[in-house]
Length: 302
Image (cartoon, rainbow, N blue to C red; front, top):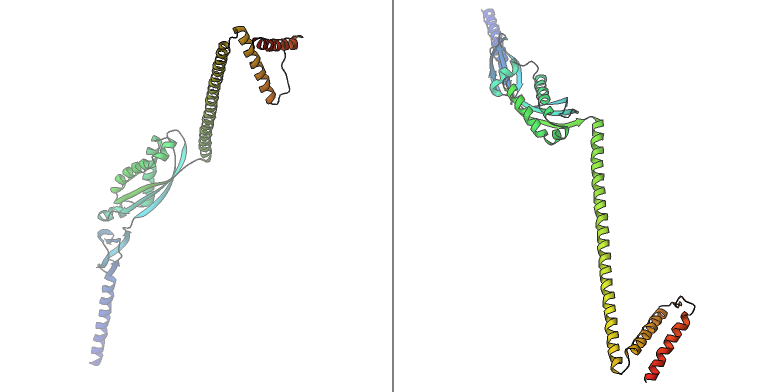
């Protein structure tokens, strides 16, 4: 009897262990931001979100894949040409995630989703970039990225993927093209610098010419005022001498002699040792005679 009870006890323990193992094997956990794809006998059964779940044991229900819902990034390098036939290399960053409502499509429809997304991106770039020249591709890279986003997001939505962002991180033409662009830019800057220097020189020349013209004008006005003052002085002297009873001839002789002596005095005071004489051989005698005649006329009148 005791042996029978012992056998039954071991049987219950064995069955209990089997049931416990089956229960434990039926339980599974799905992590946050992950969806598990469940198959039953090789056929899609359902998708399960994060948490603790139970499934049919003994391999009846099997987790075939855990699909991450976090945003992923695929970096792609593409070589293509612009509208002006310049070959460039573009680096693109495509950010995408699985649509939680289409997890089965994302898992079953695409075998290599990253590579296939890259193919769609390359096709979109090679359709969009040739619309722009090299300079325009730098200026409108956001427009190009938007074209790629619109094209790829429409295509990939059918396969359960959401394209969240497409970024063109760099546009690299060949080194020869870079050198040519730098040379063109340097030449333009040198031309602008030359134009600025020429304008500055022009301003200097014009300013100097204006200053010289103003100087000549003021000098002319000074000479004119000086001559007017001389004429006014001579006229005043002439009137005073005429009122004393001298003849016009005598007055002219006196004034000419005074002007001559003043000129010689001024010339001597300026440190000059040169005396100007008439060119003829009798020039000195003529000057002396004229001066003496003037003095004699003044004495006879007095």
